[in-house]
Length: 389
Image (cartoon, rainbow, N blue to C red; front, side, top):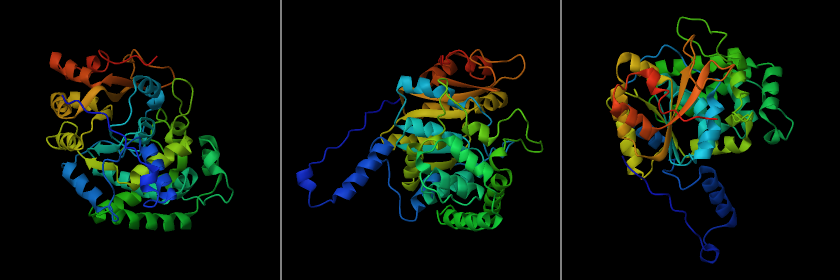
């Protein structure tokens, strides 16, 4: 396993650069570096085509999953935040699966590079939609209005408001079909300019995703294919209002500072969408090589409950082999979700939550797999899980 050096900060002499760099540019550079938490891994090209090239380099052929997975179904997702802060999980490279739940983890970990990997190409397309939304919106309320087809409020001061006010505005403002259609077309033009070579099927998928959020608003829920949404799954509104174990709302849309961090990462092409199977032959290994090239390490890897499916199909050992290719350090963690089906509640389950969020050092995951049966899912999610309270 690889260790990594701590990024080195740089010092500037005001006298040396007084006439070469304007004070406004210095302020802008300081703001960018403070948001990212260190020097950027790469820089965006004007047309963002380098992002598409990197995504293609890291990707492998996609596959099927029994859900559109437009939003998460994990109400427990914030429960690991306090322990990660206590452990000093920050910086480095964040890897995650799925849609926008990743943004809350990213906002708190403040990595220098983000890679979102998912077996579905649809998730890559949804990440491109998020990229376009972040780049066009100036603040959180604009982000939500663009997303849900609502007019931007004319009143000022929304940057200082909390998530409850934003939700109330979206809930109490009627959707505008013409505005949504115009915004959808603008976002689509932006996405098509990123160089990902979208097919007509991709465009149709993006349109379907956008229309799903417009039609349902904050009532949208996770659902499986060919099955209606289950009431046990949270709405997007529910997810935005979830709390950590200290009863604080930590969602990325509760804080303008968190939003600006994510916007900066998107503008600099530092959130890279990738198509890949966590137990597949190429993607994770390619990601590991790229992270090593950048002299970085993985700070956190959010896998949801994918290990449940890998165990069931007998490919957990392949996942473990792929994990070995990732540069990690002693603080590198895996964030997973466990679903508390009847008579199988996790020891760390918290009342009122169908899901249980779990944290484990990646070193311990590899140790577990080296010790014996890596496909024993129950042992996998309990033996080395870090107590959160």
